[in-house]
Image (tube, rainbow, N blue to C red; front, side):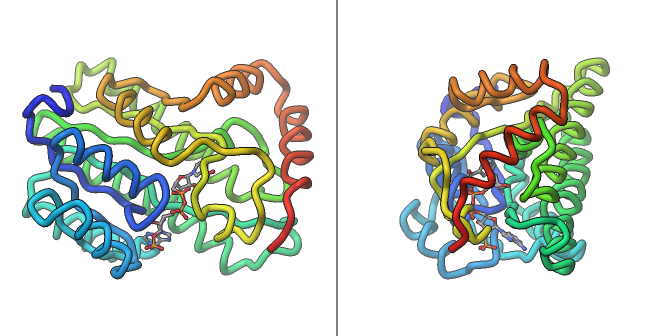
Amino acid sequence: MRFGRGEGHIAVITGASSGIGAAIARELVRRQTFVILSGRNEEALDKLAAELGAETCAVIPADLSTAEGCRKLFESSLAYSPDVLINNAGYGIYGRFDETDAEKETGLVDLNVRAMHILFKLYGDEFERNGRGYILNTASLAGFMPGPLMASYYASKAYVLRLTQAVWLEKLFTGSKVKVSVLCPGPVDTKFNETAGITGFFKGITAEECAKAAIDGMEHGLPMILPSAVVKAVAVMSAVTPALVAGTFAYLAQKGKKRI
Ligand SMILES: NC(=O)c1ccc[n+]([C@@H]2O[C@H](COP(=O)([O-])OP(=O)(O)OC[C@H]3O[C@@H](n4cnc5c(N)ncnc54)[C@H](OP(=O)(O)O)[C@@H]3O)[C@@H](O)[C@H]2O)c1
């Protein structure tokens, strides 16, 4: 199965209303995939749908911070017989763990961890029943190390990373036709920082560059997609560096960010 070779893939994309998700939607449509756009911001989803063209996409708005929202998206999307899940919605919170808002933090866990997990399982089971499919979970370079000043965000992405790697191995050892990959970007120019209430510290790659690398990697069933040379280097360094040392570098990088 290859994207853009008339295979007629149908992809559900969470977090499609902006940033990396919207760029993945554009890239998949360029590769002849029908896309189902999901997010809460219906205006942004409708705008993207109008840009992509009615024959190439559908919109299913959903708030994934609740289990019902996840199930609603899954059940509504089944009418289209999807064979691809881009499990991408997520956000970060900036600040010391003893000063951040507890409700916002648990909201982050509900989206970045619980919703990601529920959708991974629902679509994973469905794709196994159908004997084929692709799942791309969006983690982050943040998943490789402790992240002081964005502690819960980094921890949430470690969960996405480890869960996907473990399932990738299960699929390998059972000869499954369902391919799972985890996308681990470093900084990408999106409204991620604005949502987290900070300015960026490092120059990011574009969402388009990230999307292209993501789909190329997913198509080839790569376990882990590191969408730039810098990200690859940091991932290797953090794998051979004690966690508290890597975490200290993360702290210095986070400390350089300004609140907005
Ligand atoms: N940008 C980076 O530097 C970077 C680096 C590494 C990893 N990532 C990861 O990449 C993914 C996409 O982020 P991005 O950079 O593209 O940021 P973004 O432009 O802020 O996109 C975040 C997306 O998540 C959706 N979302 C937020 N809360 C939601 C909810 N309760 N229910 C459903 N959807 C929700 C948003 O849609 P609505 O507002 O319409 O709901 C939006 O489409 C995230 O998982 C992020 O952690 C980003």
